[in-house]
Image: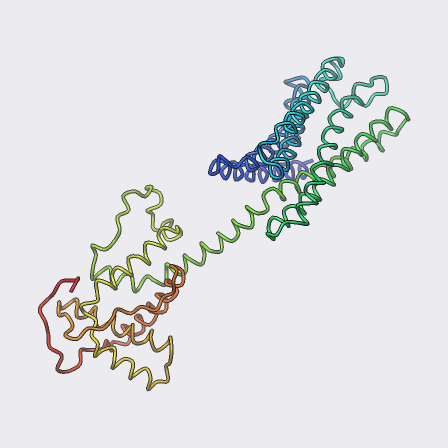
Length: 413
């Protein structure tokens, strides 16, 4: 029993997190009606699973005297309705009012029929659904056929759309999600048909109580598997995106850390270049949280670039020539030679900035990044590593002999 409660609790929590993620995405795109439909479907599934949790179910059964059974079944039918609406809106758009009116009418009719059957049942049966397996009462069979019939019919129609979409779609993540949805809908359709057949069998024949328990377990596992696969299919694109984002966060955190030596050197030279953090929430300013934020990564790259631009008046052409000659003598070529020369120029420029002695003959600021910020950050990481080696060696290049010293000029010279 404890294992069952643990598994149900785990599934409920995961589905609730998936529902919250869908709601957040739907709020970001309020005009996306299919997204709102699938978000509502996921929320209904989360609510139904919470009401079906063994601990919650037994408590509600004793306090509401069976009303929770009706509410849970209505929520399940609503989840099936919104799943079908997702496919209808995706295929025909919001202008297909006739099909939407028909779908709403079918849902209201099924809910009304289930409510009438439940209300017409004896109070003892409404309070104890397990007693509905008695052959002397047909209310249980009618109620199950209404609910399972509606959900099974909707699952069959949605499965047709899902199979068609999974064949014609081009995006891999969406195609995989639709295939998972198709498996989930097949499981739900099988569970509904199996439940109806089991109830009819119990009404027509005498079945051993042990066999009844086996039939109910098979239905429960199949339905739960279908729900889990359904939620997995609905959230598959988001899950893949979150995994990609998580790996990107880790990679950017590593780049942020490796840019530290270059950033600190430029920040010590030009502390006024640090962008203000007044608009940042207080909890993100912590030294433990801040490095993990994408904004910190972008700010560090921008501040380094601004610092290199401000360092231009102190970049000596003679230092660059000597560094290139030294690197070529060591066998460096291409990008490695550019990084070596750039690190030497930056190290010498920082020394000149500390003494406030601009270069007489200037060179261009080191620049070897790509056309996007990430490639630029990777190049700056190489520059930071090379600068650390130059500074650690204690052999910071000096200005060539005969280079005239100038008074401090403007950074815009």
